[in-house]
Length: 253
Ligand SMILES: Cc1cc2nc3c(=O)[nH]c(=O)nc-3n(C[C@H](O)[C@H](O)[C@H](O)COP(=O)(O)OP(=O)(O)OC[C@H]3O[C@@H](n4cnc5c(N)ncnc54)[C@H](O)[C@@H]3O)c2cc1C
Ligand code: FES
Image (tube, rainbow, N blue to C red; front, side, top):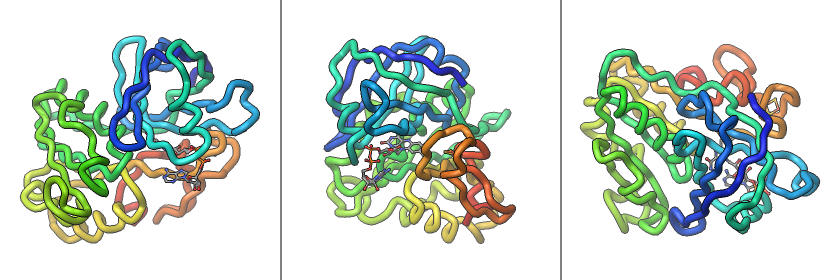
């Protein structure tokens, strides 16, 4: 883990109320695994809010990296309002990321809402390693979807919206269809109810895909010091920040 400052290079809207911010910070962009996260101090002096906020690496490119975030509170609002050139304190990369198979396979990536963020970096690495990738995103409506242009051209991108304004109507876990059979490995990130529905859908399909998920809990420190992110798994209590955020779906659900 490195503690560093990052220089804000740009902030662009991703969808309604969500932004992509690119930063220059060689120490924080080095050695990142897909699914790892960075802790961002969303204030000038680090006093209010006091605790840093966790964000997945959305994309990594040399000395630069991007995060994709939904504005939900003070920290994310502050971040979205910073001007280009702002210097932001951060530490990372943190946590255990996804493990991509050694041999080329069919990878199904499933994201719910802003949980799509780490899957773009994952897709870029997977495509570069020769895997076939289908990425599915579930969102409230068309105006909450990540653009197809965000993905490498090799990725098949499938969208599902709750109101049916784009793609199939309903929850993404209701539309796994043929992709569930096709996939040799599944990766997912999103809200807890999505993981529960995913587990209910995949548990008895006999495919042994060993789905990996990225869990999101409140993380005051991000590196195993405060125990604020403890979760119950079938193997006992685990710290989401240090033992995860990657877990096997069926170890938790
Ligand atoms: C490992 C990890 C990776 C994460 N990656 C991302 C990411 O890539 N992009 C991203 O946007 N967020 C991500 N998050 C969530 C992000 O850390 C929180 O959204 C952020 O801490 C909110 O900070 P805030 O100060 O804006 O809101 P706060 O002031 O802390 O919260 C304001 C209100 O929003 C609610 N809230 C907080 N977090 C969320 C949430 N995630 N969804 C809905 N409501 C929430 C709170 O309950 C509160 O009511 C991640 C979290 C973890 C643990
Ligand atoms: S966030 Fe402090 S121990 Fe995990």
